[in-house]
Length: 80
Image (cartoon, rainbow, N blue to C red; front, side):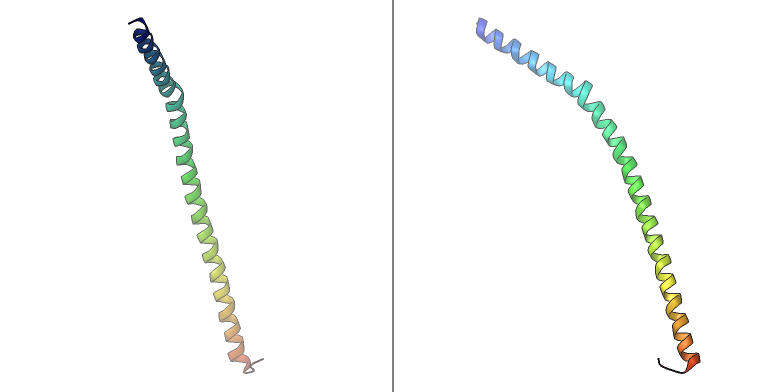
């Protein structure tokens, strides 16, 4: 009887300490990480949009250069 009560008490202490660790250490840490992930997602979305805008501008520039070259060829009449 004394041994089983000792096991029960030990099990209760271990379970209670594990629960307290989860509540007071892991949960606040999880919330902090979640906030940082939200900020990281926002920054990532901003960088992706910035990259897309840079690509659009680059493609626009290339398109304008190609149009200018084709107009020069038409006006010049020479192939090379």
